[in-house]
Image 1 (tube, one colour):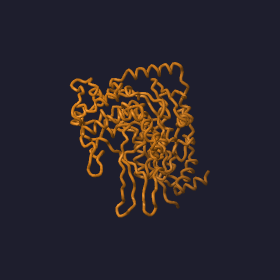
Image 2 (cartoon, one colour):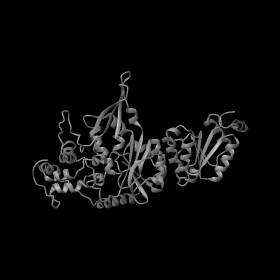
Image 3 (cartoon, one colour):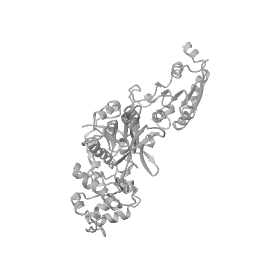
Image 4 (cartoon, chains in turn purple, brown):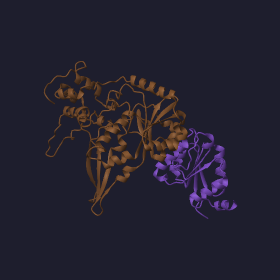
Length: 141
Length: 351
């Protein structure tokens, strides 16, 4: 059994957070949550999680982008894997700048609604092993 | 020069992609004023700021800058790589860009090129923004209310949109990335830009007459105004600290305890400090406060004109704002000209 990994979810959508928390917990991750960018940064600095799932549109539509920049400025978090999970491209059609164009300092962008199996696979990859049953999730696909 | 238009509603999305070009610094609230700092969220960015406490000088000529390390075993190791960190300055006013252009003349275009300054300047993208002058700005008088170089992009307020001037190939790269947020300006947009430019120029309440000033300073070298200023000046150096174009620096070697290794550091200095003209043997060429404040005015308004063809002052108003003795460059110049009651110049004993 691999070491239990901690995932911090920063998202203001309580239903989304509850669903992903249930999923990750089931597969052996320790999960912490924060409902906005400011609280998320505080939690990230306190917990030093193994992975951060970050929403973009929260109290401001670009809040997650600024949180991500602060995460990368923080020495203890500068190498922490971050998956941006957001609906910004469907919510803001004018914003057509690809997340892969080199401006987004995240490890991965996943559009909402996110596929649970894909999320588990990427969480396992980015945390170097993941939760105790995460490999089972991979095998179930 | 390429000209585009960007709806103000897109500005937060635009700033979100700027990290592609470096660490973003923008005007945010700091105490009772503003500072260029990384914003924690878009709503912290103040596009209507008056002036920042410190000018953008701090990014190209840091207050304290280790330049190289020395070690008996390893020799010298320059720290130029640290000076090449990509940075984006967002929302810089025209007079501050003019200030950077003046520093360029001294550190990048003069006979003594400074590799540290050049590395920082080249690594720094500058996105300008226009502003509404307050009662302290006199950039119009210093011909620094408008710039046509020294920036990558410049945003001019059109009401619901910004007119975007593209100044460099790096600015063009930023537009290539964020182009979906911009559009072509119309003839009406250009007309609105000109109308607002005229309004902004008319909005300057603080004005300084520069005509013949170098000659008048030459004639008024022994004016009693300098003694009066010397009596009031506290030699705190605040004016030169906040000045976008004051560039005096000191150099010191910091040796590590128990070792012969260390680093050479340069740090901001001020000609207002008593030690500025102190030399070996204890002689001080400007021991009197009056001679130091006179030196500062003469360097800015006369010596720089002789050397570079224009004063080094850009009319930002910072020195007026911070001076604890309420010395106001605009009124000092008026006094030297003899146009302020009770301060008409007269030759008297030198300072």
